[in-house]
Image (cartoon, rainbow, N blue to C red; front, side):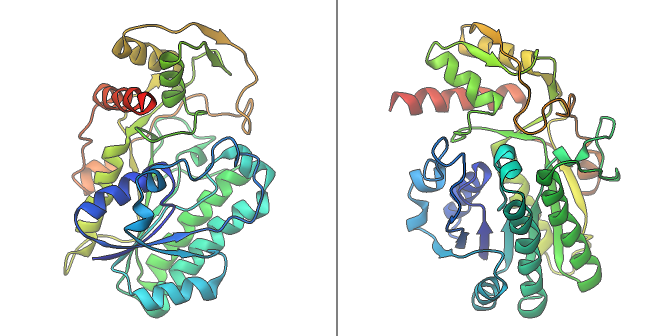
Length: 334
């Protein structure tokens, strides 16, 4: 199977490429040659990711282009004739999105539009799996379900929503075999974005550092272990590629553990598995983008995925955290 992947240097991207390479899939990776000096580049450089740390770039075909340039996207899709495109590329850090709104929206909307248009014109049988986010459920009551309306207040949310609407429109109007994944917060090894609570707390425990929280720890979150996220993509590739499939294209599906935990509860679970407790300091300040508008509670309703896709998560929160802690303890020793 020939697969084009965008966003391979992200957390899920690295894990997904690792999994697909084991099955000898022919992977073409679209990478963006960054021409903007992002605020986060020095803090979390893209070369510090599983995809590059494990030399996956040497095992895949790579194309460095701007997804916003249609001619470049068209050529890759026309030449590759992929069986599937897994589209994860986006500005992933919300404070970067805040400072670069035009680029954030164009990468999401124009990039998605260009991929879908190239599929429509040159590779109509291609499966299109689009990844968005749960943050655009802002303004709705939990648990969040796929029928809720969006009311974005930030460019980060609007950019993600544009990806989803385009995928739905091209599926319904132009028969593209598209689907959208909305997931809970991913966690797992090789996540070096230490703004995320799971790797941050583990790092603090390993280094005997104080845990500093921007909130009082009462915010609740809904998670999904990264290996389950990989299995979801594999499941969809299989379901969507079957001959005469009854799969309804254009849909969006929630995927999470549906096991909401507060930030303090997550710290307690990690501490219990790790075997020691960190000192905690409430420094305040709120989220760097959402500030007081940050979602206080997040829980996804995954009834639709369980009913229509017969999906269940394989890994519990505790099992995923145990593997994640083992990874970081081993990684930092090396």
